[in-house]
Image (cartoon, rainbow, N blue to C red; front, side, top):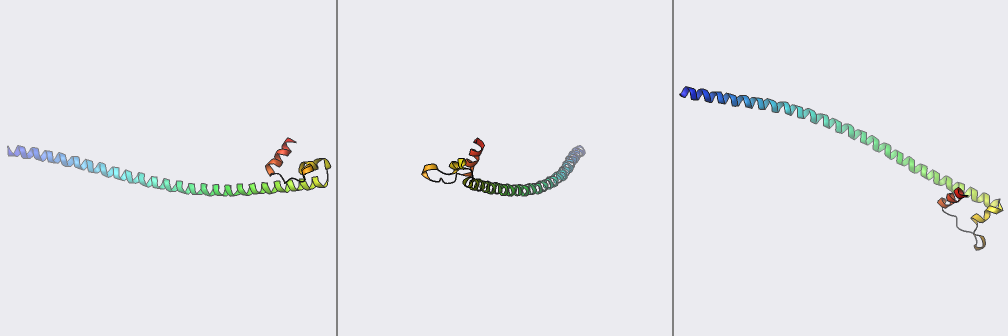
Length: 122
């Protein structure tokens, strides 16, 4: 009877050890896989950060160019306005009334947007 109990206990103990060994091997494989995935994700994050830096630099450069072009357009509009006004005041009497206020005296120069609106309507 003791031999049977001992034999049964030994078999149960061996089964428990085998199950623990299988669990240990599974956990080891899962840990290796998790480390591999973690390393790949870290590399992906680094790649995305580098791409984001490049995009942000390009965006900043585009914004600088845009502001520069806006200023150039404003400057050219002002030069055009002054040139046209000087030409009108020097030459064509029919158009002089547009820039001079008539009987109330000269008007201040209109904003550039109003000037372009007048040109597009005329």
